[in-house]
Amino acid sequence: MRAERPKTDAGQATDTPAPNTLILALPGFEYADLYDPARLAELLDRFARSVKAHDPELFAEFERYRACQGQGMSSPQISDLLVRMAPLVGAFIAHLFNITSVREHQIARIRDEMETVFVYRNEV
Image (cartoon, rainbow, N blue to C red; front, side, top):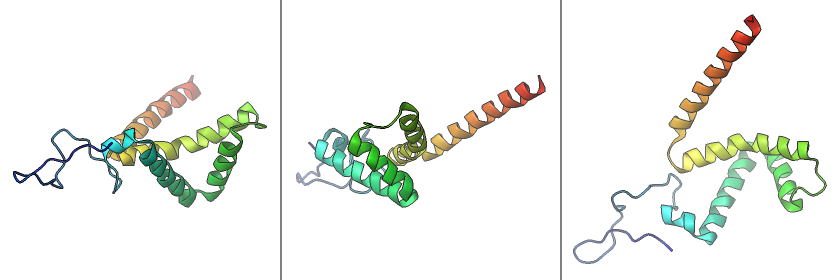
């Protein structure tokens, strides 16, 4: 189900999104697509391609995990894989929702806080 686009006085759809409509950063995707399983599959494919382009080895490992759904993998192996995937998921979602700068600011803030904690710990 797609969100309806605003219409002109003649009843034709415009390219202008309705007020208060969330605009996604990925061309070809609209907010309403997030409720459509077929469009979500396309979004997952786009994410998979971005991971593959960024880190082909990690992508291959993640594909093996998805294929076996973790069967035969130890909990530490699964955790390690998911921790390594997390930054790529975060970056993709931040880009999708146009909040990359907010995400980067938050990462820097957390890094600074942790650095302060470790400096204090090392001094004490």
